[in-house]
Image (cartoon, rainbow, N blue to C red; front, side, top):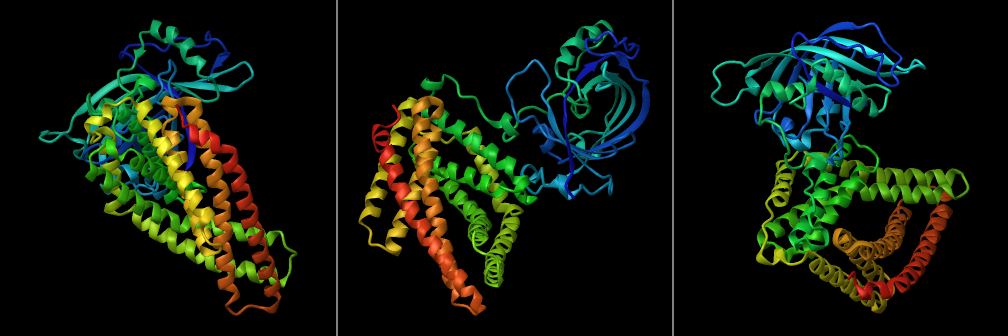
Length: 526
């Protein structure tokens, strides 16, 4: 069952036990304050013994009482850019279920961070919450001000090593949370709440306060917060440029992990693309780093890319052929061919997805994630890594462009047939590498690198369509050799003719695209 989603945007305030909630009708846009209502909430927070989720600013809890009882998972904001207003956090909800079993729909979103470690109860919070709803003149529910009296108990799973007994705390805080209002309400409410004795909270969450100082903060891989900033831009050292590019792709891979587990559309494609970009960057800049760590990462990323490729390629093939069948007259033959395609490609997709799901639960995958974050946080650089990044990436782009030119010459001299098709597939792969390397240069080479990346992408896409037609042709010939209704023969012939036409058109488009970008790719990015 897919969890409900919402965006939580709130601001917390510390207040004394004797503070009085001020009149809020005077806030700009607030016409009236609804009748306050009180609820008694009890929440148990779950994490690993090492507080893995908390360090990544992820909150997992099961709460009873109130209007939103159930399991809640809060993920960190996607953007780490500084802002005067609170950043929204994606919040996922699932029904209460069992108190000791995290719903699979939520667990899928954190498995890439847990990496096999079990979760257990770490903190229990009991909150007496009095909520004051704020409404606009048109009756719109703008926000809620919650007056919380909190009692927190750190459970055995959340205790620091050597702690003698559970730690108990009590405090009071206010939370202003948007419902349908805009973020400007926070700035308007600050002086009113401040005059009543409130101060901006010294903790990001109740869980953080319960666990104590020093338990949260930036952790590698925590969404956008895991991406290091690129300082000095055009004057940044080479390793910094590559590290920032790799960090972005690591974040992308981690962000798509849950989607792959939950079989969301395009999740496999996006995760595979991030894997390929990292492989391309590590290959292009391998001399900046010690050889062994780079070789190991490239090997493991190749393994993961291969696992991702099974179901993805089957999915693309089925879509390609079904689109061709849709363009033919309906009838017994078309349906017979569609059934054969769905059976063959569907079986390949299902088998590939099973292998992928097994891989995502494996120790090998979890250690790859560890290695990627270790590489990003402590790059195994050589002395050349301090060379000017702009010069190094320009050289890498020029080298990738030269590799693409060699592949083109090889395809031009290859014999028609399988050898020519294989040579064009190599051109496609080299165009993809050029695109990825050029993308890594964007931060220091600007528009020109973007143009090179676009040219590489254009050739990659054209030859990708060409390759899809080649694979589709081979499958059609295989299916034709198997028993099939007589009416299907004509459909197979029409589809084979279509693949030949697509291949011819694709090769023509490729020659045109290559000619158009020839001068650009020879000049490089500087």
